[in-house]
Amino acid sequence: MKIKTTESELEILQVLWHKGACTVRDVHEELIKNKEAGYTTTLKLMQIMHEKGLVERDASAKTHIYKAAVSEKQAQQSALDKIISTVFKGSAADLVIQALGNHKASKDEIDTIKAYLKKFENQ
Image 1: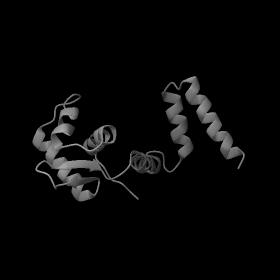
Image 2: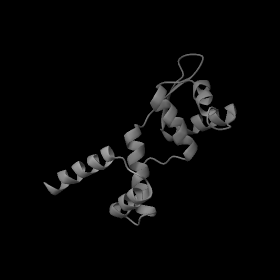
Image 3: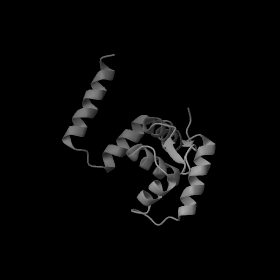
Image 4: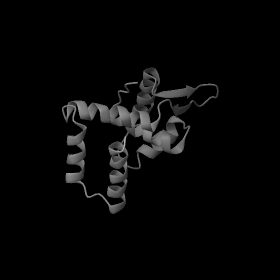
């Protein structure tokens, strides 16, 4: 399943993944902790996200409750697929080399990567 999201939509999904089901006001209050955002903009984005199938909306109460309709893993995989195909011309190896070359990985992260690669070697 290809998931197409904007950066703002991903920020909203992050709130919903972290907090669970929320009202627009709940989401908006989380968003304004890190950036300037208007309430009506948040509302409109969440309405668009509902139309796109990114969030589900419970309209049975006076205040609508939204929850993520896609998992964090699905969104990560879709974004990663897009980055690999467009930025790295389909090369997962180039992505990994770039990521490890530009960001200091902890010993635990390197050990995890080594263990993961070892699984592939033993297949």
